[in-house]
Amino acid sequence: MGADPPWVCDGKFPEQLLWGFEDKDAGYVGTTLALPQRMRLVLDKLSGVLSPFGYRGPLSTETRECDDGSSYVIDLSCRFPEPPSSVHSYLTPNWGEMMDGCAHGDPVEPDYIADYAVEIVLRSEAGAEHPLAVTVGVPERVRLHGHCRLNDTDYAVSPSEIREIGAACGWSNSLADAMEQAIEAAESVKGDEIEFDAASLQRLLDTIKDGRKLDLAWGSYRGVKDGKESTVSSTSG
Image (cartoon, rainbow, N blue to C red):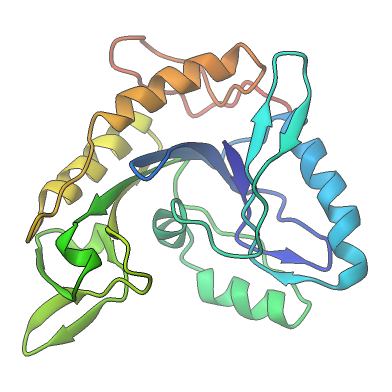
């Protein structure tokens, strides 16, 4: 799991940011509700490290949360993580303003439009080998990596010869609705050998429930069967 701020500016983090859980190379569920205190403490320590260097830019954090209350940073990099950067950029209409403000040392808080974000990774073995022609039925909720358009045809162009060619996204004040949006978007993408793992979302719901045992709560379930979340955080910021 991890906290994924859109920016870090001279050691300062946004007051509100996206955080959540990833099923490696398959799916992501996150929230912009209050960050659990144990994760906030990790960012506080990172702030002290980054501040002297005057670092301004994105930050990807991944932590291992233990049942003894400890947190360990296991994957730290100065980049936009994927997931969840595709859905993150949809969540914040002022993305460009934030990037400009961070670069000039005048940070701008994210203007989030939803409490929950979901991303499904789109994959294609063929896309790892050559530019992949695709059709996208819901373009307003799909990001294609290395996207270009030639002769009225959309292409995903893998910059690193990997099979992950894009992301299908959903966002809402209801986690269940965000999941439905992401699945609908994923199903709308057609191309050679394109696939995705919708079952990853159920695995992530199970992870959310496991996280509650470690005080990593991000809202309370309205019902176990449908997996809906409330929009009221049960954690302290």
